[in-house]
Length: 159
Image (cartoon, rainbow, N blue to C red; front, side, top):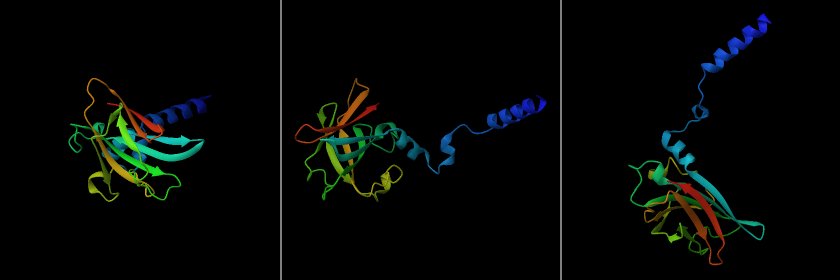
């Protein structure tokens, strides 16, 4: 009994003195960690077949000084499965936020230094900076990627 009690006490002390964050084991800076927290993923599936892989990062919650907070801004990665072209316009898709059209959609290169800490290095698809007018009085944001046939991939965020 004495051995068990001593061993339990020793283990408790060791565990109590250890760090409680899993992120200490990763070589990431604070911006990368925040970007990961505000990133969502969705798939567009049509007729039981995956057509699009969509990742979106809500930039407004990451770093207000670094990213424009006047608009609702998202860094989007899109991969069109089994398509030769990875271009958003060629594949005829558009974005909406709470049913409002995008204010601007700008392609971002994977080498862009401003976004280097938050790009998840998807070399197959393309990245876009998508901006919308500020959504007031609503803390729930529904970002959707839509085609002409009303198929959509949806990402839900909170301000």
